[in-house]
Length: 405
Image (cartoon, rainbow, N blue to C red; front, top):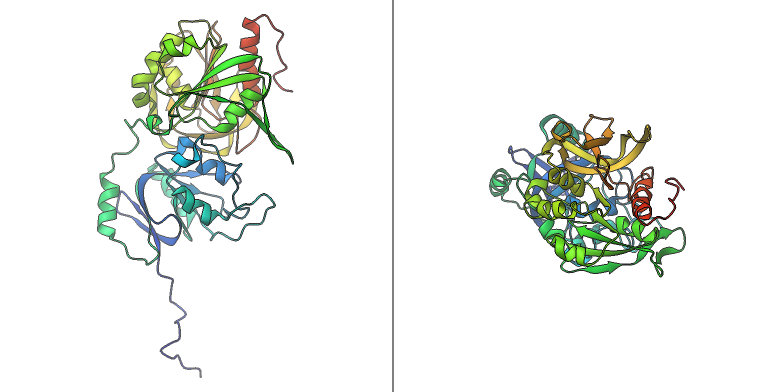
């Protein structure tokens, strides 16, 4: 019979955890660390998308959040410099943490420029792998999105009591204005057009209209789709006043996505939106922009139990009667029952019936909760950008584009 020497590893031995996810209720989840070392306190959500992890982690709407990926294999295709969504990568706006089930493998893609671990380190994202993400997802579905601390220490030494205290002490996203942290520092003009297979991104050279985009945490692909439809897009910081925006003589105004509590950002953004609505300039909002438009029109918003995060959400467009599969990323929602007379609900989630779109009756003003630019996700809702452009064209007496090309 074989004997075990002192140097042998017992078969029941486990690796020492080098990363922890410590929830506000004191739950400690052990894993293997990757990405940046150190720790971050944030809200934990789960995302059900099968692809697009780089776009997800660089979406500024995820500021203040740790993303748990329900798809088990993340990182297999590596990373590159094209699949990012924040305007200023140096500022590293986006998720502060990530949770994976399987260990990250070496990249296998002709587009890969670096492995995910290396890229996470560069972005300052703390990550862990090797945990039961199904169990964590079930916990979030049952108890809601918890506050937590994610920590990575290669030597496996943690002050767990301190991590528990930090997780329990964090106040969470309610009442938190994060748009001010991720918005542009100054105005700029966006000219890049959508990516084409084997060609890359294009450059706009002859715009036919001018759109001012208020940046509460805007994603690049939103700006690309507007530019691809002929718009010169001027991106302005979140706190830009209505008088300054109107002085730019825009043909349309875009209210962008972004992170945090819409009521907190609305303290300074809603009065600006209300002033802009006094004009007849077409307005289009997405995500946080949708929520703040609703607030400006007299509606209310509320924190969701588990939020909507993924690329497989069914939404019905009441204006066409069609159902679309869309990308979503939000933890707050517009209360449809709070919408005043004259504000119509145009889109609704078929998962839970929550509001996903509004329009102002008789006015060129509308918004949606989901992400029609996808990136990542399905392109079912790209037509909404054409709908916005058509409002501009109609005001100028120009023929409408087909909503679905």
